[in-house]
Length: 234
Ligand code: SAH
Image (cartoon, rainbow, N blue to C red; front, side, top):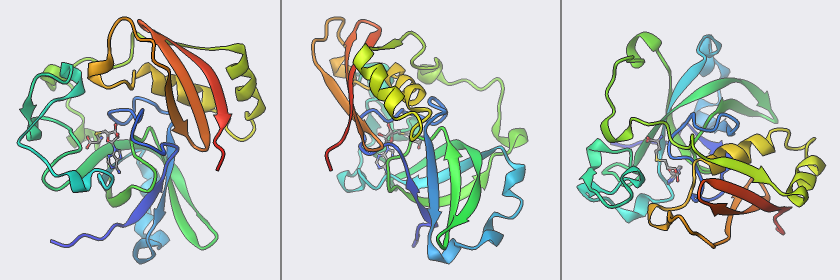
């Protein structure tokens, strides 16, 4: 089997840490799929605007070299209990292929490139896209589906607050990043800490990068305080 990507994603997520663990959890995370030359033909997208949501298949390129094991320890289960790789959405799988449902935000052409905008992504910057298909409610939406250990929607118990300094930065970049506050809030509500770090008392300072911006926060039980936001140096 030989696969060549149909395109690559441009994403605000520049590092694995803090990317939500599934799509749709942070709707403000918008990415752009830049089509490879072989697929950079608007005919490939004809009538795609009829679909509000799309499935994206992609390669977990960042972790591809790390291989896989028959069992994984999902963060949901506190990183302790093991489940089978095929009973999980772990990135460490035999063929390293990811699957995400995203919102269709339309396509355009710019500087000779064909670009499709997609929302609610959980993809790292530069992820190779293998395929795109329309989401079909009649086939893909199963109202009474059971999801065992992954039943609950994550992140609902957390609140995120910004210090005056952080607020000031947000205001200063509002024109360039109008949804930055919502993006940061959505991402942090997911509590990106690894499972083993989730202790009631946590004095560590955490940092993450979104676009070209560094964000620092602390967490006290379920209250997250963003105290510094600044542009990265390079
Ligand atoms: N919705 C997908 C992904 C689930 S795993 C699926 O179910 O198949 C989600 C994690 O994948 C994210 O938290 C992020 O850290 C990781 N990820 C996203 N893009 C990646 C990439 N290109 N390479 C490796 N890991 C990636």
